[in-house]
Image 1 (cartoon, rainbow, N blue to C red):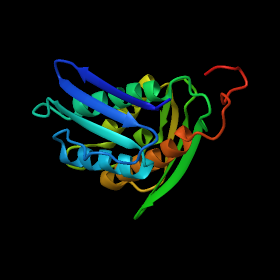
Image 2: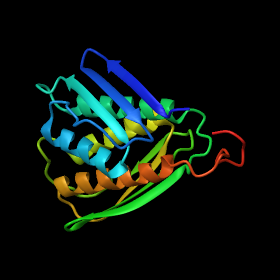
Image 3: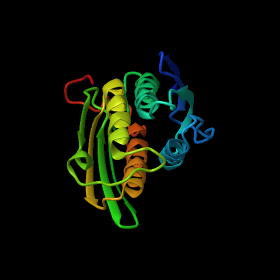
Image 4: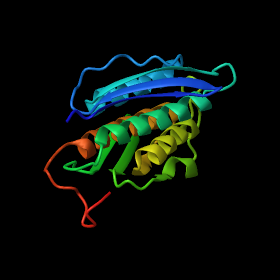
Length: 195
């Protein structure tokens, strides 16, 4: 059975479409209208090695928050659909990723339960990257977790500059996601018998 999904989310603030293929690497360049966010979505696709296509529009004339959060929500919905009953997946993934002075650590559990522990919000991260801050990244990941049924822990071991923090976290998230969705058996990865 193909592990694919296509989800569109349309609100008064955004219109986002995510197409996802968990077993195919080809993807399209993201096109949301926010340059740095598109760069991060490109990093997500490249480092996860998943077939991810994201396009959309949002009320960027106000602020990028709605676009970024709704993209996370839509990606989470697509992942949940593509995983189906989650039978055979590795379930867990983790990665450390450096970017110059920054070191990010991300741990992911596709448990069916939503939780985000986002350490950078408690630290003195400064600046933004093209109008995107670490708070926007948090909302992207929160939307993803809530709709994918994922537990995600994001730690920042070094670094405080927003561009490097956001990029290191996004790449670590991508690598953890790649590992977690991998099919490694034919059993459900739970002692409870369900996720």
